[in-house]
Length: 282
Image (cartoon, rainbow, N blue to C red):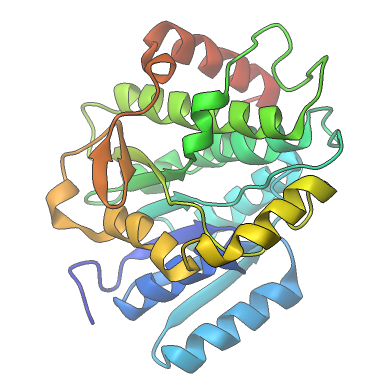
């Protein structure tokens, strides 16, 4: 079904599987030109083939980047700016639950780099084409797990005591601080910035984590949402005309909700922004 977003340029990261692929399919079905940012070319091409089987008229473009690498974030941002002088929607969906402690080539813990620094840098690098849109939207996929997180400024991205769940929760809390701070910084522009919890979705998410997390997702899969259900809120935030002037909010089940009290601390958000800019070299 065509929507008022028909023909719009919408970028979805982590679009080769799970919520990302379901989101790309739904947006393409609405007539948007969907730009899929994927880490693996084979999986990205397979996702495009599967979507086109269901939505033959889909307009899909593939760009490759391992978002755990700040160099690749910069590379794909340059490609996107060159190819799309106007970007109407950016959905920062790519994310992971880590397993054992891993450090990226840039020196940051894997979840912090992929889940927080990548969307922070990518969004800032794409600000020009987003602001060129008649009504640009940035949508950050976070998680209710943010309620377990905290921002340790002294060791942000370089934890002294490592836990996969803690690393994930901290990065998801950082997503919300980033959302709220960017919304404040773009208050008097035509850009809106919101974030969402998609629900616990039965997908390949967590498959690269440790044994206990993999087993949890395997056993709990029957009680989880389908990727299509998980995509409903990001698609709503990307397409609903009712959200034209709504910015700096947190959503669950396509409805505005309250995030954790800690996530509303503007001082923490500003300090995190400065640290993130320093860590990314932005």
